[in-house]
Image (cartoon, rainbow, N blue to C red):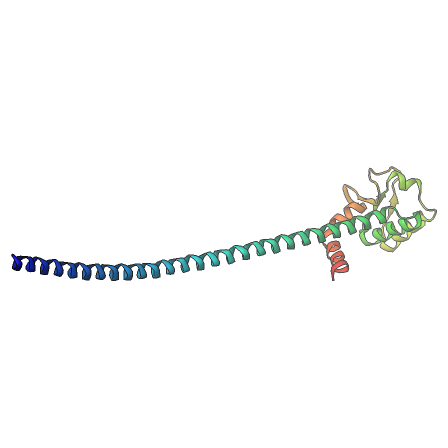
Length: 197
């Protein structure tokens, strides 16, 4: 029986050694597998972090870009509002000039707009009531210089300021509002240069 026990012991011992060897190999394999997995996981984490940083940078750049875009638009709008305000004030200043300067402005505009045709100038009721004493003489001067017949209508035009030139069926609006509107782009350029350059 001793021989059988020795064989069994030997088999058990071999089995234990084999089991220990298998267990050690399994542990080595698991350790190696976990290390490889850990490396892959670390690579994925690094990729995710890199992607996250890239997205964050892109997002930050977009926020900055949008902020700068909005700021530029706000500045342009503010400049535009300031320019419009200056133009409106200039128009109001023109409208509210003392009589002598107001009518000098009227004749300055008339000299630039009169055509070489017989015609009639129409003023507002308010302007007809405050005509300077030399108005007719100055009007005749313009007409003679152009070689035309230009008369003052005694019927008031439905306007606040400036005048209407009438050539038969054709009317030219030379009110301050119309003049400022037709020259709006040029006036905006001038105001922009004066204010911001």
